[in-house]
Length: 455
Image 1 (cartoon, rainbow, N blue to C red):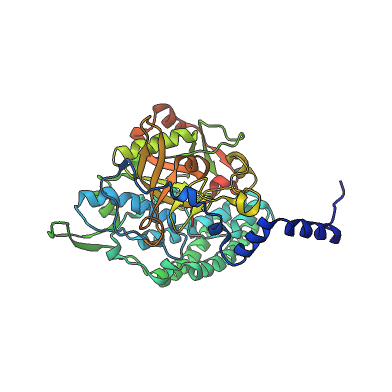
Image 2 (cartoon, helix red, strand yellow):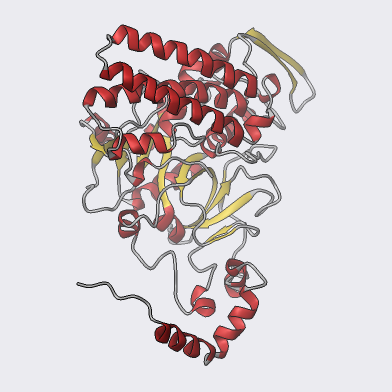
């Protein structure tokens, strides 16, 4: 088949046809002055949507959090999910865990994980121009993550209140720090591959990594600060009673004061990937994906989306919030905080539909869809027939979007754009839990299921 260039005559014909349609002229007049997606918002749909739910967790977290100019949504979603039962147990009106403490240790561990991956792929004989190494080098250190990566950090380094390790410029705007780290990591990658190629021993290679990581430690410490070995937390509860915990390490704080309330090891991550190549009832992992050397792997227990909706609904009915990952930007009215398949009417504006013209499996296959954002479910609505209809979502973009920082998501939107949820294992059927005992099927590093929540 020969390629056909676009001719001048073809463009003239398209132009004439365009301007023969008054609707095209009106749409052009409006969309050249305003956001095309805002123009496409369906007023009829907006009028039917309300931020009211039949079930909500008893105490939602306060204040509404804001990840600002960073890709830490999975960090915030994790800590927002944990703080809800923690605040109830400690009778707190407002509270945040330190997102910066979590972020600090992820940066340290993630850099070390990358360097060890570089050595591992060199030993495999992967070429520098091959797809795997090129993929690793394309983004050596980002802010995004997955649930199992959060578990690794919490089990190793614990948690601490935000007041004891507050935000910094580079935690709220991580781009410049990441640029420094990426530059150094690519330099270190060459040094390590050269060592492996020259036949240096494993001991010499690991000594080089230790030298490199000392420099990384300094860069991260300069940008974020370094968490103290111990801290003391003083606070008033809702009754204005004074309390004091500490001096204590962050790991002991988690083990003694958080884990009895929310044990991350009691939670399981289920995904829904409908691609024919990835059958349900199987466990998957992604090559070279992780953040802590020696930590637990990222595992995906693949199940039908209907089961995920059922488990989230049951969890919220039990009063437990749910961490989840989705593709947030599709069919999303940001200012109103609405995730709904009908919230935009693109056909009216453009004469074509977008975003759901392919099914979920094909969107994954053709690069049109992947998980991009993590948030927390805190409410659900169930109709008189027991069918789940919509969800309440705690976001981490501040309180000036949606319903004071909260979103509304329809169940139909969930089916199309939610990819994973984390629920307590006591809610999960035994046959589904047994899937975790299987040997994981390894997906390539660039598989869309390995996409990290960063928005």
